[in-house]
Image (cartoon, rainbow, N blue to C red; front, top):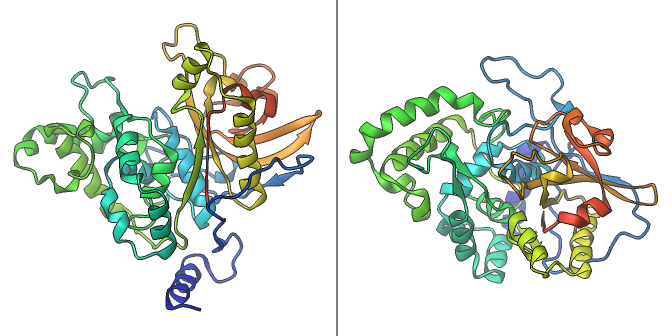
Length: 378
């Protein structure tokens, strides 16, 4: 066994406990397998490490954190919550979705090339366009104008992201647990800190050092936002007791559209995904589940809840982790872990009956209508 392999085994033993339940499997899946649907749709369920939900506004903890997933609250970063679930399942520790989002927006992607992991370096060589892909994903992020009329790209006003880019960037600097940087109810734990940073950014902006946020794209930069985001990065650095990742995070992805709106526009233009493409995505979900991985999928939130006619969002782009599969009623069903925190009772008729505290059994036929991407970790 190589010296690097021994070091990795030691790190895993220290992080998760040697041979303990839920330990992250070191084996990597092949980079380019042949995908096929699971014959007969046999039942399978993947365990995702449960996070202890710190409740905003106090020190109380949810008495039964396994009952519901960590909720994104009013944030618009479902991709980070789904990616955090996917990473947590891979490494055996509940990581913070807010840390995932922070790295996606601001981590320096050039640092990936300096990480001395042979599997990661082989992955980067096999995907030479990864820097451009990350830049594209960051440029696709939107800025909310809610209480932000100047559209300053403050961290808590950024919306949207890509799961594969987020997972790849999470190889940088090790993991941060949910208990260190609580994400339940989105940004609710840090409302006062964000207000203070917004106030002080006016004063600190002209005199700041830009290195903390200098590696991101210009769209996520401004004089005030740089000061705000540098302050947030400093807070994350103080709170996170980082640990080395026990395995490299090597995302495999396939998409037929860049997002749900793009998917809808393609359908309306007569360029709907071919059934073979949709079958390939479902085969990738089956492949991941059957090999102990929890994949994430991009689809429409309106599969879960009816659209309010007054809602300006026609697409309702959403991301969830798939954690189980079973056959019932003559077709496959997939259990998606929804992190919105929405009550089952508010979901549309026919779906609310298949909802279990934020985890919803979706029919294969329902997924086929809006599924546009699949990502899993090798």
